[in-house]
Image (tube, one colour):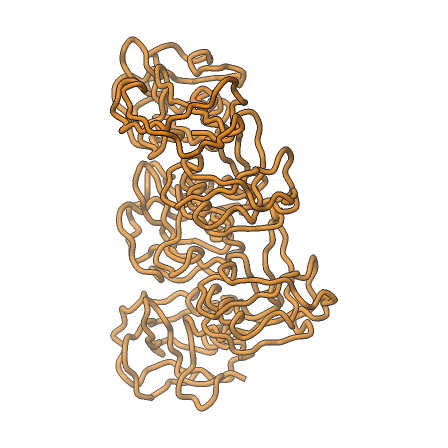
Length: 576
């Protein structure tokens, strides 16, 4: 449904009756009517409509009209399209034929489930100028390659009348809407969380992760949308949302709204307590499954974080750190180059079509991403200069605009425990780029910094010499207890929501050194056994660190919770 004369203004009278169809009538003149309550309605408010027009092509099982498995009607029977050579040009023809905007993604491997009946088209080759899919070149009607089967059915995700432009991935960017003849932008003051939920849903991009203001993804062209969007949040498409004339008539291209969706269609992070941390799960062949942690490193984690719009990789926790998943283990021995835009583009042993079965869910991989905040220049990953991402670039924060409550949120977002110390005056070195022009006003209980209110900074003269720094306690996964000071004591590890100890069997100064560096406690002086009172689990045994690890969890050990270590053999550390 399109309002505001999207298809041009008509002539003659505006219908004076409100149409009140139930939806099951065969003709509009069978619908009840009542006098319209909108007597001032003018030709500028003419309604427009796009019908599905499914006579010879349709999208099925995508949850909305503009996404799904591609099906063709031929000889009175619906059939599918084989994914061989299927690309964005072909997908674009389908989207335009259905009045569904631009192609967002061309999918294969029966992403929307397996169809039935004939495979009508294979080796589709569109030039991009065709008005219907049937005009495109292909192998021949009903003559697919012998290897084609319904597990290779092609699918499409179209933008509909909304799209995200200039983002690092398909599910982030400047919000643009189509008015029937051209694309326009949306004022940031006219767009809120409920509107974002609908746009992300319409684009099959999962729930919204972040709203960005002030043309964070660059300034667009064309008109700024003159209507305020008033979604309830449960609509399947943005054009089903009510609108009202915008109260921000002076809104300019510098106020274009941007949006980052979580993009959970093929990868997600689960059970981490926030969108940018958790167990890695991949969607393939209509089913969610996990990734084996074997050989997974920070390069691989970085691809996941970037795909989700979650900033940089902070760490790769140990096996099943966020609990065991269920279903298939889709990827084993992942090896990313680091330039991939999605995890599925990375190599893995056996590939997605032949997942490895030697791995089990106690080895499920997890990832912690920075989100839109990071700590830079510190001795460990939970300390450093505070930097916040704005669009595609990072900027610093003025020390006068950042307080203890803001620090609590940053440390929580980075899974670094509570804040330990705030440092001003560029204690971790001066950053580059802009100094954040907003004062952050967190209440302290937010899970992410972008959920905190902001206000224009009162410190416009703030320079990089005033960049704020932060040290978090990093108590999320290791601590030293009962040693009389913060850098000595029995080693305890946090895993699956519980603190436990480390058995001192094979424990040495190399292992202790990793703990000391992780805690920002300099070098290891000793690695004694610790005969203190202990309760709870023995999480680690037979620890064997190389010495280059940044965290104890990265060291080889005998498996989580599998120790028969007796009392009195807890590992301890004395750091310098």
